[in-house]
Amino acid sequence: MTQLRSEIVIIGGGISGLAAAYYLEKEARANGLAIHTTVVEKETQLGGKIATQRHDGFVFEGGPESFVTRKPEAWELCHELGLGDRLVGTTSSGKNYVLHNGRPAIVPTGPVSLLSTPLLSAGGKLRLLKEPFVKPRTAASDESLGSFLRRRLGDEMVENIVKPAIGSVYLGDVDGMSVQVSFGRFAEMEQKHGSVVKGMFALMKERSAERKTSGEARPAKKPSFATLQNGLMEMVETLAAQIDGEILLDTAVSSLQHNPTQAQPYTLTLSDGRTLQADVVVLATPTFVSAELLEDVAETAVTDQLHAIPYNPVTTVNVAFNRSEIHDPFDGFGVVVPAAETSRLLAIEGMSVKFPHRAPGDQFVLRAFVGGQADPELAERSDEELIKLVRQELANIFDITAEPTQVHIQRWLPANPQPPIGHLAMITQIERTLAQELPQLYLTGAGLRGQGIPDCIRQSRNLVAQIVTDLQTKTEALA
Ligand SMILES: Cc1cc2nc3c(=O)[nH]c(=O)nc-3n(C[C@H](O)[C@H](O)[C@H](O)COP(=O)(O)OP(=O)(O)OC[C@H]3O[C@@H](n4cnc5c(N)ncnc54)[C@H](O)[C@@H]3O)c2cc1C
Image (cartoon, rainbow, N blue to C red):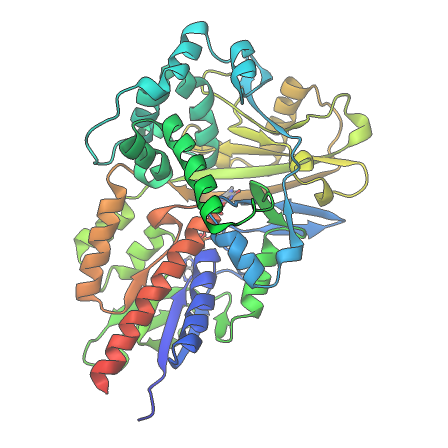
């Protein structure tokens, strides 16, 4: 019997949508399934939040600038795409700072720096050292990240160091955010080992024992964070080049209809008036967009819940200077700003310290973050106002008064999801409801189970396994 080809439409050409298309084609080939994919992307370029701008020898990142390698999916995908020799790690020399009384103070990374740090009082340091002896929480239910961290590390450590660091990544408040989504690994360590410190030691012991049993040599040290020589957009461009299906740019899906009596039950109306028929639909869009697209077909409870997932705005401002005009160039990866400080920035990254190859000659690049939950209105200010603000802050913090040689501003209004407490249970329930009412319609993306690039790739990879199983079941039923 000739197998019918399944039409699969993926809405959204960010990393989640592209990874879904890539792995779908790969798994379909491996399993002998006939599929055709179409990625529909609203913007004129792919990548979503991955937004590299290259000009005059600079590689500016308006969104993510690297990915963590401890979660292996992005590292693995780059190797699979043939980009292994294009990967670069962050330099090992950079330190992390927290703004303290208007000046950067190094984040302690060991017992000696902990004893001398001005960021914690003697009481705060003692409280931190007590972590292994703090009783674990017995309930396995979700809690806020703030409550988890305060229980384990004490208030001072959270307020002065952890909260600004997390705020600069998630752009939200630790007290409203689910620990299961943001730091699930640490919550699991507490459940399993009674403490995060004990959990870390147990993990190191486990890894070393595994290596001994398998006779495997200690793996070559991977950098903790990696990126691509020509910016993260290289991953997007290479993925797109390896997708056989169609990619429609500058085309939004404006509505979605479901008619279960039709052979291809989903009809997608596009912004140019065309329609697409599909057997399978993957929504790889921010959750508030998915909510709108599902409005005509899903239960109100589902769309209301997806709509309610908060996102905060952020604007990034890359500023380049002639190094020779800066007296004492910042030597750190970044400075995060606690709420108690007067600075209105969320964080500043030392882009030229992290990735020296991304600026030509003697150019030195810093990147400021503004907005977030703490100051959402700031993210929407005009370019002139933002440049003025950032230059003033750089003068205050680093004494940089030189004229910038380049400025690159990127607004994300809204930017990253802030998964609330109970988020994972809610997403699982939404997926169950959708599986019953809208078979072969799936969700993926940063708003579901983690927003880092590796999290997005992992979710799309897992989803592909589910789609392939569903397609096989359907094919068997028809045979
Ligand atoms: C400033 C910033 C810095 C970050 N830094 C890092 C970092 O250093 N490391 C890291 O791992 N992660 C980082 N992240 C997070 C990470 O970049 C994102 O979570 C991830 O890229 C999101 O990918 P996605 O594909 O799920 O969503 P998106 O990238 O948002 O993609 C969704 C796509 O859907 C499209 N779309 C929307 N509506 C429609 C429609 N109706 N029809 C068709 N298409 C539509 C959009 O245009 C978009 O391209 C950062 C994020 C931001 C904003």
